[in-house]
Image (cartoon, rainbow over all chains, first blue to last red; front, side, top):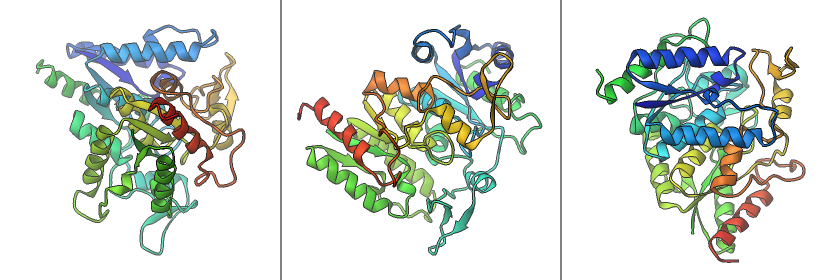
Length: 185
Length: 185
């Protein structure tokens, strides 16, 4: 089973090393991890961003499954590129798995970063007057329920690990789910 | 042509009115807009979030196209639910159109909200040491190039309108593109 390894991990200073560790965990469970940085693209080259997009889309097409890192990135929600990829793989009918190293509910994540208050009708709103989802889910309901339907519910730790970007325990839990789906366990 | 109207518009206090205006603009161009709030779900009901997810997925399945509002939401990127839906529709092979009422580049959006600096190798990084995409695109490259491949490039105004959540000029530009695709122009 080929697994597309999606996440903002690619933006880490040690992005290549994280990808190597993730692929290693996949291999330990009899699976093959495909990491976007396996496509070597020079970011300074002409049309580099389009080349990266095409390489990633080709990689997703060849994969049977996705494991997305939905740890909040520069805001209360997951990285937009990763979320796009999760949606794309769901649309393509692939197995969708994901984890977040921050188990907090979306409402709590918003409250950590923005002013929130109760509107006259009791609903939680932010400073712009926009409603805050309060379903107790860690992120937007579309992604959270998509995982249930197209794969397996989001994996989260009981509490956030010390190194939120490098702890791979929840990632490995997703790999085990994938191995079960592949009939390897 | 049935168009799924995706966006954080559903979180506005006047969400229903915005949906009505968007559907009206679609109708003026001979198209039918499908707005998530057309599925009346009581947010306090049991399993409300799952019911909303299923209604939205059914609506997306019935649609021929998506027009996604990718205006930045609670961070430098678009709303995660909307991005998921854009990815899903791309994966399903539907026509993908989108607009952002904030024309700023992603790097500038990040710099407005976070501390950024040049790393020793010259690349832009945030306070966590994570790389900031600097391709001059308004948001993550996956969504931006997906639009080119699966529909039409992101529509942005020359400068952000006064009411970033209610100005529908860029939305209407997307509707015109959809009408051209439907052979109505």
